[in-house]
Image 1 (cartoon, protein in one colour):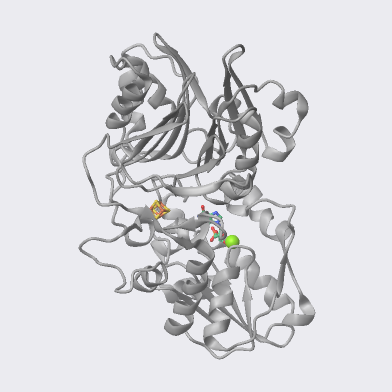
Image 2 (image 1 turned 60 degrees about the horizontal axis):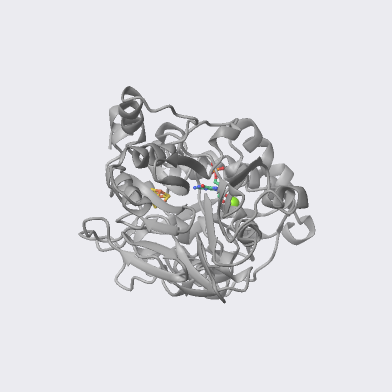
Length: 465
Ligand code: 5GP
Ligand code: SF4
Ligand code: MG
């Protein structure tokens, strides 16, 4: 998901709408904005579909006055699958004895089922099926006198990955979980302060990128003043390495470096680790493009756009049902036949999950008359599900969970298939020594099976690590 918050400028909701538009790649199912104005109080609009179709409309934006607003774009991971209900669309809002509070959450709570059961037994009335709603109920139960302290109380009880933006009548707050699994950055423009999932959302409004919110840090912004605190026990950070590979936008800055540069470097590493003689390096657009550029540069093989993407389709993987996903590839991608015919083609993609995308692309490339097809993948085999906010399917549906690399190659039906090593990926992400097995810098559980946060609910359901 993507989250954005703004305080200190008139019509803050307009800034939020623009920020969310720049974060649309993080969630395309639905979006919502809550704003506050001293006269009008809290208002909200929650809609299915793209930001540009909902939050550009004068009739919608007119309902969101005030100089304080937060918003969310949704990508369903926890909560209702397939048909998202509008009640699952964030931000969530709660009215407590000490006033109202709205929250927007990116990530996934790993103990939400346990918390929910417990809260319901103690009288909480849940409005949604979302894991994030627990945070509001936990805040309602806190005895603290301020919203910020209540939010801290609530977040000390949840486990998992969370970047949270919250707002009261006067405050904008932002928190990252102790491991900092999901991103959150701080920006400024004149008297305005902003919190956003990624820096690309600051760029769109012309705001200055100040810094990342640190893992385990909470910031509270009120009357133009920012206060920082550390509500949790210190921990070593474990940022999601898949943000670097796929999830974040390539023009965003993470850890002082553009995501594009990291992805290009993944391609360079991949060319060193898995060279092959061929005539053309071709990205699977758009997610494979930077890595393909790096692979072509390092190998000296010609780069070409052999596949064209229809820009008006969303990300296939993010469409929640298998049927839509299956159709998606053809609706979205088409082969440039005259470029491919007779060539030995290296296809570069970001990941293989179920393998359905790779298999269909291979068919399209062979239909176009390619002499050979070689797949190079910019991440290691995805062998484990993510429980921290990226929607990977259950383990049995992951190709790499049940097959060796050679079996995957044969199942997809290509001449060769190679994945970047975990060490190579870490090198590309700026760790010169590769992955330190004693203290990895990133979360890489979907590749390594080493979960930095025990997935309590999944273990209850019989998941075996
Ligand atoms: P598959 O067809 O192997 O199940 O899916 C892999 C494709 O889904 C890749 O092309 C990748 O770009 C895309 N994709 C979109 N969203 C995600 C995601 O959240 N996780 C993963 N691993 N791949 C995704
Ligand atoms: Fe990211 Fe994978 Fe960890 Fe999920 S399991 S947080 S996708 S690295
Ligand atoms: Mg892709």
